Length: 82
View (cartoon, rainbow, N blue to C red):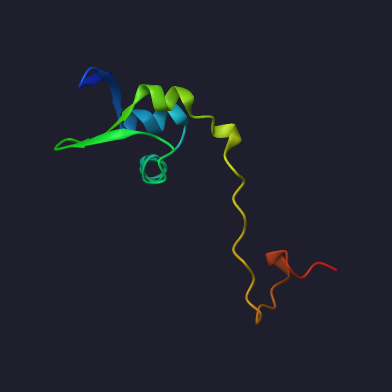
C-alpha cells in the first residue's frame, strides 16, 4: 500500500522487496549504497516509489566470487583453472 510521506509516494521495505523480487535485507543494502532512496520512521524503512521505478536490477554489476587465498587448494573456487 502506497504511503505518502512529505508529498512523496513510498512503499514499505517488505513491499519494495516484493516489487523487486528480492529480500528486505537486499533492499536495506541498496538503501545503504544509495541505490534506492527512502525514509526511516518509527514504523521502519519506507522506500520511494520513484527510486524503485528508476532501479534497473539488470544493470547491477555481477557479484564476483571472493578472492582466493594463497593457501587455497580447492579446485572449485575457480582460481585454479589451467
